Image (cartoon, rainbow, N blue to C red):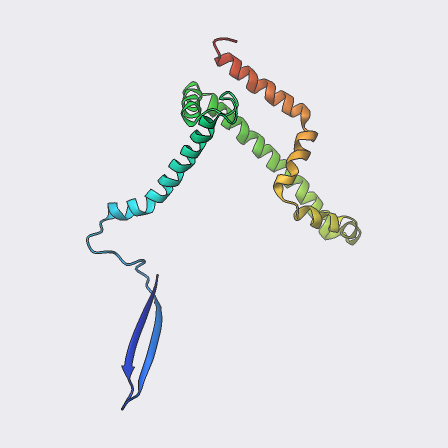
Length: 176
């Protein structure tokens, strides 16, 4: 925390100088008299809790407005209820494990390809002049821009993924 000391001092007859010192206080922000640990925690936590509450309220208001049917945009209570039942059934943990495996495989493939291409680019002037500007251009592209490419290139994987998630959903559903 920055503590500013504003003082007036007299250097001699009639000379008044204005001194301003800034000192970093290693103890952190000043503590108010009578403020306990619980109060400090509450002061730190309540804005975050309020933001989450406002987001949930806004979500529920959009659902109440009827902007989309409830099967397309369910309310927060229905979503958290379904999340709880999927967690209790173990479907969420299975889905998380599959997602982590896919992410690890994708990272390993990307790392392997990147090391090979990087090694070629740094060791060969010809390869660097051939693909260096393309690599620089691709590095400036935001990650979200790769999403359409991924969906087009992996339609077979997407079909397999969709069919497994749909079959998991139908296993749970008593009407299916």
